[in-house]
Structure formats: C-alpha cells, structure tokens
Image (cartoon, rainbow, N blue to C red; front, top):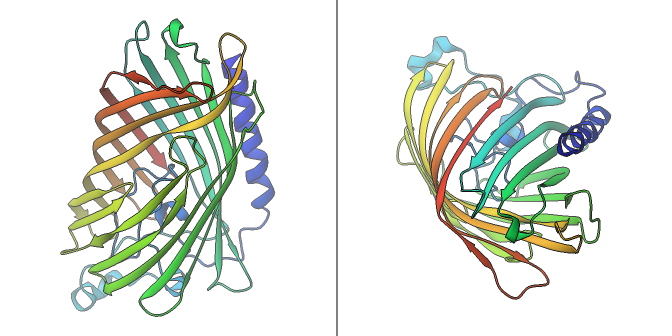
Length: 344
C-alpha cells in the first residue's frame, strides 16, 4: 500500500511537469534554474536544493542568465572561468535525493526519505523577468515504536514558484511561494499548506559581501514564522561563508577542472522537520509535527548544464515530534543521518 501511494504521487507530479514542458525552444541557452541560482562568480554548492528552508543562496542577476559563457581561450585575460550552468529550453533539469535518519525502530523513530523535483523557467513578458516553477514530491517512511502511534508514511507534493528582481545595481528582492499538500493521504483536514518567503539583499561589496533580511512563513505548526537574516562573505573564489539563519553553510572548493567540473566540501546547519495532516495508527485524525536540527558534512561535484551529485552525513539532534491535540513534545534520541542526490 505504501508503494502504491508513492507511485501515485510520482504520477501526479509527472502530470504537473508535463503540463509545463510543452515548448523548450523559446528560452536561451544559459538560463539558470532555481536549484542553481548562483552567480557565475559565486558558485556555491547547493546540496539542500529540495528544502524550502534553503532559500538563502545568492541569486543570479536576470541579465546574467542570457550572457554566453566565456570562451576558454580567454582564461589568461578573463581570469578563472566558471562552469557553464544553464541549458537550452524551458526545462532546466531534475533532481533526485534519498536520505536516511537512523534510529532503533523498537524504541525510537527511523526515517527514510525520497525527494524528486523538476524545474522550468517561464518568461513573464521578457527574458529579464523570469518565473521559476518547480513541481516537487517527497515521501518519508516512518519506522517507529508502536507506542508512538505514528503513521507508516507521510508525503508532500506541490509547486514551488520563485521570482526575483533587481531594484538597483546592489539591491534586489526575492520571493518564494510553495502551495502544497502535506498528508499521509488518509486525512485531508488542513492538509493544504503554504510556504512563503520574502528576502531583501544588499550587495555591500559586490562579489564579496552581501547582507540579507526578510521573513519566512514555514506552514509548520511549531515555528510558523521565522526571520531570515545573515550575510554571504566570499573572501576568495575557493572559500565562502554563507552565515544566514536558518540554514548557514561554509563551503570550500577542493578541486577545479577548468569549465568541466568543480568539487566542493561544505559544513552546513539545517533546520529540519515538517507538519503533516495524518491519521494516527489508532484511527484518530491529527496534525503531526516532526522537528530536528542537523549538522552536516558533505561533498558536491558540479558539472555543466545544471548537472551535479552530492553526498553528506552528519549529526541529527534536538529531535522530537508532537501532535496538535497534545501539549507536550515527545523527545527522540540524537542520531546520525546519510543523504545523497543527483541533478541531471
């Protein structure tokens, strides 16, 4: 039954994808998708591409999306050349991610997860005004102690929309809206959830230091609203400090093969969890919120045309889950996590 629901969700996401991908010939070659919205001078790895909490990566200026990649022959004059990140057409690539949070299922909660998404670019009147649409689907398989009364699986499906505009040469705004359904497909009450984010970014020192501030509406019961504040400091092309709440990251480039590939290592913090409408094992309809904090160490290999692969592991702590009808959280033991994915 769980796999039937999983396959049904994939098919539903596929229908959303198919309706958008009718024509791929009217966009330029170098259009950059949401998962890779990183300026060519600031190619930061983005392993947590699937999470709406990972909103705070630098966004390419609209004009940069349509500039042809520099010729490798000008490297001595132009300096270090970046990887060409875009591809021709409306469809900008797909991502598959698998994750596992370990725990003893007889006394705790182990979670296996699968994420799939695909990104499309839609011009709003001109190529300088782009809306990025990402149909997404996620399944989490819960292996828990019977006393917890948890469902065996929960799902999330929706479409993420991202729009960004530059107000001046240094000041820009970004908005993300993700309407979606978070449920076990047994309880539809309050299953519709909305993620929203508004962010204002000031390039204090172009290509070196930027400051950001805004607000995030998570659509979760535990922390419905969070501030979005921090800075992105790039002292060198190999080292980047993305010190932004709620998802900080330090990245270091380990290797670069011209315009063919880049290998990055990173240390990141993640605010994990979500809220779903579910039917408890006892048959009662309720709202389930799972929460944790993560400290992850990872590697990511970046390739041309939005292709990449990553793997990471780390510590998961401050774990708990809660029911809407209960006033107390149920604590869980700290544990470890593995996560890997590919974009193609």
